[in-house]
Image (cartoon, rainbow, N blue to C red; front, side, top):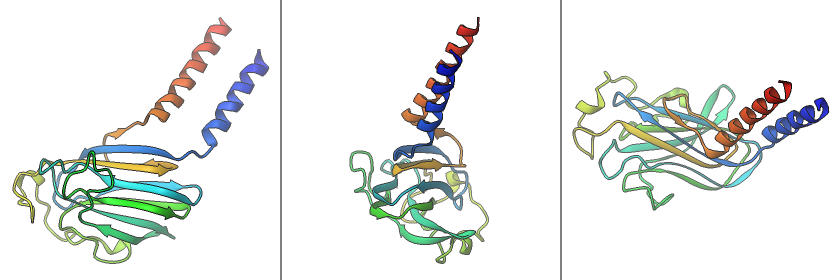
Length: 199
């Protein structure tokens, strides 16, 4: 019995360490007009068909986003591209002014996807250079008359990543994906089985 249990634990460890491209979704709310949403993701191997995007604008319900994609460069991140509007990545969910990137190829590495409110563009080629609104006095999003949009934009954001190996969003309210829930459920089931056998 102990050998079987050890085999199950070993298989679970091997399975959890195998790199499988997955999809991730994170959501939450920003407070001020110059807040930035940061989402980290990694690729263990060179990848094809990686998509990172936001679909939270919802036809003027929430703030008009700008997205940027960064590659880790030592202790900093280098800007790959920045996008104000690109509603064609996930046409069924995105509306005008949503944005993001669809990448046919992307090298293995560590990346950062940022979401800011229009027109808070990156001001340089490195993340440490900052964003246009960094020196501004923060304005509550609910009280801010967003350029090219209107007063009273909602604060909700949603970030989607597809074809990446892992992702982390230090902002609030990450939404667990089905694969994560399956792994957690398998572990709990294994523990329950082990406790029952011991009795």
